[in-house]
Image 1 (cartoon, one colour):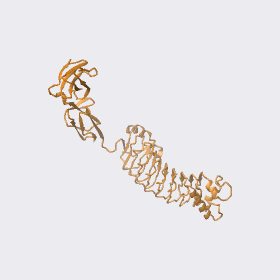
Image 2 (cartoon, rainbow, N blue to C red):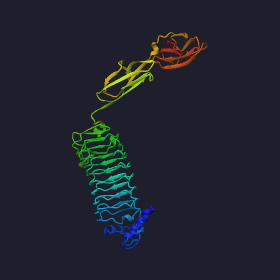
Image 3 (cartoon, helix red, strand yellow):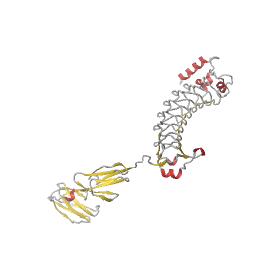
Image 4 (spheres, rainbow, N blue to C red):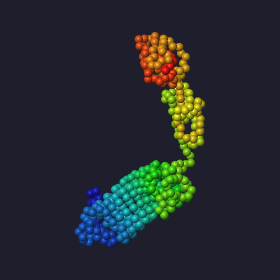
Length: 434
């Protein structure tokens, strides 16, 4: 900053035809506006001293002053805002005004503007100038840009993540990428050449003005439909569909009217408002296995409406496929199972353990009683064995070690049904819990 201040002082001192301490201001109207401002001209003389310019750290407003030359503004290195609209300026150098956060130079004849040094800018207004491009890459804190009635054919706002409002009415812009501007609340791009705008990732958006473009697509499916206060898309003859997040809300609360008569919402006749402008509805087909270790299912995923879906169940070792169920109800025993996608579905493949059909001789268990049993099962074994109690699906419910001295198993936590004892040596015995 010291280097900038020193440069400004030296430049002003060398340029001044009057004295070493005066700022050179050749435009009489600009000079008069500054001299007549007591907060700037603190000594009330007829000149602006360099020290006065450096000391001033507020805003300068010189709109409607018939100014054609802003030379001298470079000495005001600490101003935070500059309003110089509605004059006759053909150029503007703000490279030394590095503390500017608000710049408004609307309706002049400025054709180019260098903002590379103005990293603190949060707002810029350049409407009504023959300007065709702006490099905003060094303005990361920019929240608002207004550049209507100009000559823009494109605008790059990819390095302005804090941007909240963009207004560029009446230009020649055909593409607008707002993917890096998630905080946008207002977009006014009427009277341009846009063919599509995707606002689906902008949940804070409340005002959309896109009238009189060449839109064929408009996606505002951003989960924010109830919060939109303005949405104008009339004057787009090729637009047939507007995609929203809540078409029922739109149908009940959006009244298509004439913007010139104060209507908040407008679109051309024949345009439909829906959640899906693509015309193809997709459904999610989910799958699961019961038990989870019984096997796997292939074929689940997203499918277009009316397309064929085939689910295939593959049993793991020790299991076999039994049937398909949905919401607890049996739907098919075919494997593979084929159907037409017409709704979201979650289908379960049911497997059963092949333990339940084993015919192996039981060589190590002498006796199991009582069978059926209501609570305790006594198991007599020839030698100490590790056993498991499993259900019809092969799921292990109880694990225990049985000895000759202790063969009692507490089954009080089991529901009534058919179960199996499986030993570490492969013995399998069926019993019933009442």
